[in-house]
Image (cartoon, rainbow, N blue to C red):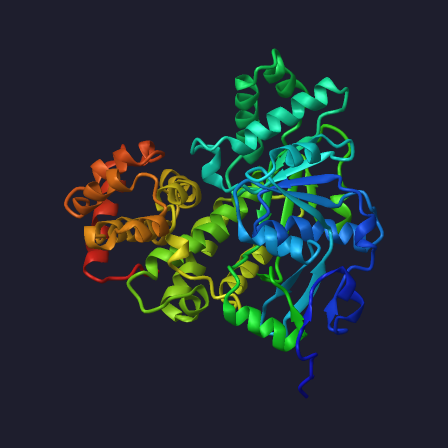
Amino acid sequence: MQTTWPDPPISLRRGTLPHLPAAVARPSYDVRSLRAGVVHLGVGMFHRAHQAVYLDRIADEGISDRWGVVGIGVRRCRARRELLAQDCLYSVTELSDDEPRVRVIGVLRDYASVAEDRGRALAALVHPDARLVTLTVTAPTYTGGETAAFDLLADALDLRRRRGLPPFTVMSCDNLPANGSATRRCVVEAAGRHRSPGLASWVAHHVAFPDTMVDRITPTPTAAHRTRLRRHSGLDDRAPVMTEPSSHWVVQDCFSGERPPLEEVGVHVVADVGPHTAMKTRMLNAAHLALGYLGAPTQHATTDAAMADPALGGLVEQMLRLEVQPLLAPAAGVDPDAYRHEVLTRLGNPAIGDPLARLRRRGSVRMRHYVLPSLEDAVLGGRPHRVLLSVLAAWVDHLSGLSEEDLGPAEREALCEPALDALLPLAREAHADVRPLLAAVEGFERLRARPAFVRDLQDELAAVRGGARAAS
């Protein structure tokens, strides 16, 4: 039976919440009464699909009304204007084989901009209610010389210190190893550039920077997604978020002061995030790279299509089950078999259809963080590693096949490869001798010193060039 929704669809804002169709879940709390205990830098789709959803549950389940969010945009973006136009409300649609599940999130209370009004952004950080600052400013920001976010945090911490306010906790939710330590380094460096004497030392001694692991696939909404939302939910949302049903968040129990009751809404609050991060990066992220590079020569464009290919999907399953999972340390509260099955199911979700081209971004960095740890452990430990080796070879082969005609400004931006110009000539020569390329990529020092590994990789490159597939 087909349901008839309002025509025209209902525009999303506070005044229309009572009139939304019953199928659209909406806040049970008064969104105007939330106190903003969280300030978030980098209000992209991932934050709105992930951290904001957990904080929304805290309010919706009546646990606390003190953990609303003030967003701060580090760069100019259209999404800020769209969110402000609808009272900072937006919908999250969980996509799966079943009917989409739509919920309106009301936890975002305001959205400031460093570029447009730095004073307003700074005021949000210095407000006494602010006890936690979260960040999703993308992994390259921590090494790429962009300091706006960290300079802002240093200024805010200095003002809090001068006014006798306690420091807030700074929590990175970006997908990089030891993200708490990386954030600490960047904020302390920013404090060292600050004119206030002793600020860097004060930050280092008084501000907590917990590690986190975040995990939720969040594709960019398409016109088809927005049309489907209007047709199936009767909702006109100018800033919708599309995501998968699965979501994980692991947080180190290390805070400067009061923290949100995250464990009451499904967050793992643990002493050591490392095993959880390793499980996610070595399984989910490594599987992404396997699909991205092993799937590059095929006609498959998305993860679900690649996983439906018995040969390619079988290789990914084999890699996770035989080559990756046996090397993982236990992660508290997580069944590794169940997580592996969940990863395979998520990758095959046809409603998500993550583009394989997106999974080939920042190849050298992601290969080092996601594939190399398992490959090195397997090689040094005498464990199976045939598929892991084939993923590395497929990456090298993909680089070697890029011609100058392939690499206009748009293509370079899509690849987002920080060492592209240095790696390209080495990759083109790698089918004859892969050693110079291995020497140029950080992290391969121990493996490239093993002649047997270099020979195996050289053979695998020859097999890739010949069109052969890794096999069990």
